Image (cartoon, rainbow, N blue to C red; front, side, top):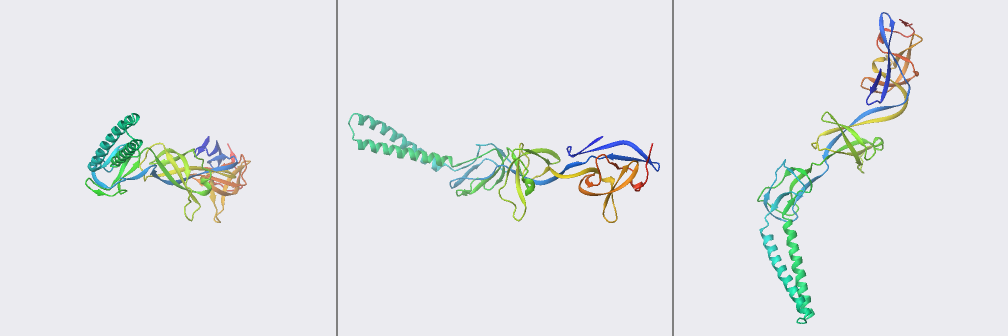
Amino acid sequence: MKIIFKDSLLSLFLIQSAFVFANSNLEVLEVQKQSKYQINKEFPGILLPYEQSKLAFQIPGRLELVYVDIGDKVSKGQVLAELDNSEITAQLNQAKASYNLSSQILSRFKDLREKGHISIQDLDKAQSDYQASKAMKEFYEVKLNQTKLIAPFNGIIQERFYDTGSVISGAMPILEILGTDYVEAHVTIPLNISNDLIVGNRYSFTLNDNNVEARFTRISPMSKSGTESKLAIFTFDNFYTPGVIANLKLSIEQSRRGVWVPFKSLSQSDQGLWTIYTLENNKVVRDIVEIIYFEDEYAFIDGTIQNGDLVILGGASKIVAGKVINSQ
């Protein structure tokens, strides 16, 4: 039976034959030497919105209407709040009237100039008045647009700082919006591991007890102060609640020869040495081994064990080195 450990990172071959010793069945494991192994690590990260902004008017004024509140979902381009625009609307109407008049005068002066009834100076003056009135009209059109607070992206209202009737100055935050198209995970990773991440590749996360994937997008250019770590940033396709912890799962390959064995096959001496029992020509042999890495119920070990060695599993506590096992 082939045992797959953590997404096929290791395999063990169990032999189902039983050797009888002292009326007890022994389970044995035929091991295969490997030149490398993989370890599984998890790195916690925090979910943050890809887009987040505090919204403010560019001009001062009195808040006429605030259309949204905390928790409301909004769409890109949606009007979220408005300033009192009565004064600017009056100024715009006056500017439009001046523009329309100057446009008519300019048109009439062009006809008169073609007929030689006015001087070139009179036409230039009409042209200048027209350009000035046009600029004034466009100026107040911009000012009127600035009395509206527009959602820059799809999102949810995180905070509302002022209510209707408040008098505000320009650049004072009125609302805070969090983007809801997707979120990012910001994960602090050791420098030597972050160098192996590939931009554009997808990596596994555990999030609210679910397995999800995110795309690795970039590394923050600034390392954590005083550490050998980098901030890796991953983007999820779907939206999840910001502030939640998501754990990045990485399988890291290590070059080292050894074998995987169940941890129950190992024994530790009073001196702290780790040993394992094997069968060689039906004789029990005690081997001293080094534990390189362990995870869950398995250990990757090195020592004198070779390919094809039979490691004793069940019943190992009842045997001693040098005993002969009679098979049935």
